[in-house]
Image 1 (cartoon, rainbow, N blue to C red):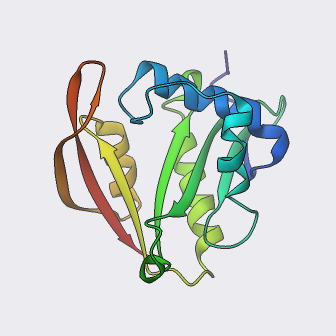
Image 2: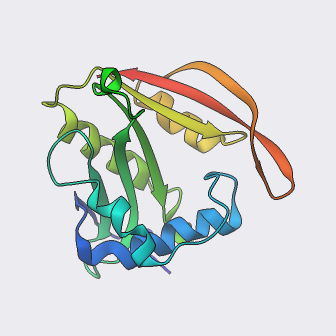
Amino acid sequence: MVSERTEVQVRPGAEEDLTALTDIYNHYVRETPITFDTAAFTPEERRPWLLSHPVDGPHRLMVATDADTQEILGYATSSPYRAKAAYETSVEVTVYVAPDAGRRGIGTLLYKALFEALADEDLHRAYAGIAQPNEASTRLHESFGFRYVGTYREVGRKFGRYWDVAWYEKEL
């Protein structure tokens, strides 16, 4: 269990983070509708994802760690919004926090570092899709200037039911 007073550091993700990042993501795959993946991943299956987020450029991976133990507390990414060339100045962003590290401002620290890293990139917009309901994620995104642009109704099916996804955008 992570203590409440732990100092947190944020840095670019690295290959040695792969197992811990996969474990965090798999929690959300197995336990929540936050991601629409329905089967857990092995670290090797997640390696292409990790490698698609270099330390520079518009597609980044930022990792929050406990300053003392180096335990990974969460991560944030910017990824291609869509594969077509005209979308290259848009990114989709997301943040995942370890289940025992929530409500400590980790998501805020991660997004702050991510948007600072992206500040000099040739980017125009960031988009975030939030499976509903998820008030904590909505508050986080709105605190960073994201504004609601619409909802895809019952767009994903997981755990035997359909889920809406609310879309938010932010000018970069």
